[in-house]
Image: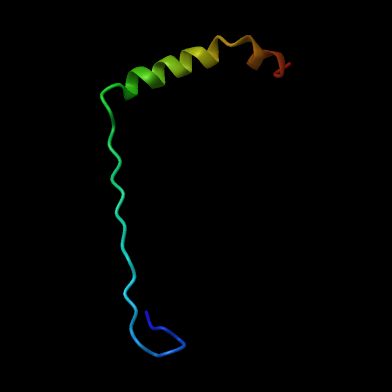
Amino acid sequence: MKDENKGRVVLKAKIEIVLGKSEKFDLLMNASNVATETDPKDKEGQT
Protein backbone atom coordinates (compact mmCIF):
# COMPACT_ATOMS: atom_id res chain seq x y z
CA MET A 1 0.00 0.00 0.00
CA LYS A 2 1.31 3.45 -0.83
CA ASP A 3 0.79 6.67 1.07
CA GLU A 4 -0.93 8.86 -1.55
CA ASN A 5 0.32 12.12 -0.03
CA LYS A 6 4.04 11.27 0.04
CA GLY A 7 4.28 8.33 -2.37
CA ARG A 8 6.11 6.04 0.05
CA VAL A 9 5.28 2.44 0.97
CA VAL A 10 3.30 2.01 4.19
CA LEU A 11 3.20 -1.34 6.01
CA LYS A 12 -0.17 -2.53 7.24
CA ALA A 13 -0.60 -4.56 10.41
CA LYS A 14 -1.91 -8.11 10.03
CA ILE A 15 -4.07 -9.74 12.68
CA GLU A 16 -4.89 -13.43 12.87
CA ILE A 17 -7.72 -14.60 15.12
CA VAL A 18 -7.94 -18.28 15.99
CA LEU A 19 -11.14 -19.64 17.51
CA GLY A 20 -11.33 -22.99 19.22
CA LYS A 21 -14.16 -25.19 20.41
CA SER A 22 -14.16 -25.55 24.19
CA GLU A 23 -14.85 -28.80 26.01
CA LYS A 24 -18.22 -27.54 27.26
CA PHE A 25 -19.46 -26.28 23.87
CA ASP A 26 -21.78 -29.22 23.15
CA LEU A 27 -23.16 -29.16 26.69
CA LEU A 28 -23.91 -25.44 26.51
CA MET A 29 -25.52 -25.69 23.08
CA ASN A 30 -27.75 -28.58 24.15
CA ALA A 31 -28.82 -26.72 27.29
CA SER A 32 -29.60 -23.63 25.20
CA ASN A 33 -31.70 -25.62 22.71
CA VAL A 34 -33.68 -27.33 25.47
CA ALA A 35 -34.36 -24.00 27.19
CA THR A 36 -35.71 -22.37 24.02
CA GLU A 37 -37.90 -25.36 23.14
CA THR A 38 -39.62 -25.38 26.54
CA ASP A 39 -39.99 -21.59 26.84
CA PRO A 40 -43.74 -20.77 26.75
CA LYS A 41 -43.05 -17.19 25.60
CA ASP A 42 -41.85 -18.44 22.21
CA LYS A 43 -45.06 -20.39 21.54
CA GLU A 44 -47.41 -17.46 22.26
CA GLY A 45 -46.33 -15.50 19.17
CA GLN A 46 -46.57 -18.46 16.78
CA THR A 47 -50.37 -18.78 16.67
